[in-house]
Image (spheres, rainbow, N blue to C red):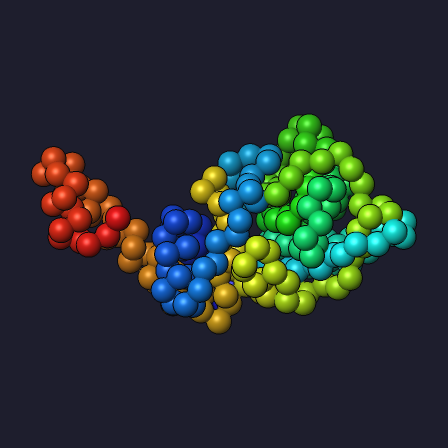
Length: 216
């Protein structure tokens, strides 16, 4: 299954089901810290990760790896930025959003801050998930170190090409080499939960639903 087919499939399943499937298939959690949340809109996001690693500096440098990735990444990408723990400055703003929209990217997911919220909401309605909201610049504080390398966000490893799924429930990273199996299991979970919910309503009993399906 190619990336476009995976993206289309993951758009149709619940993010919670994806998280449960990653737990079982990959043998480790794929959900990012709950503080990384949507700041612009409630739109569901699905796409392959383009990863950026940033770290502390006292140099006044532009976030070059991120800027290059925005222009060079494939359409539909999700720009995922990790900071090695520095979270209280804005890794993303209005101009980077303009570039992402111009290149038809899906979203940005940040282990740090975003700024220019009014501008982004008003002019672009582009999904940005972030740990913080901050007016502070990265200049003199953070610099980009690499692009398209393995990064970590919380306890989750993110690799280039991993499938990122997010909505108001949070963000889940699906390892690319497990993506087909995770999607299949997430679809099965959605189907079982729909049947279980119908049984609970029809029977008037949560216990009956749990007894038949064994899922909560």
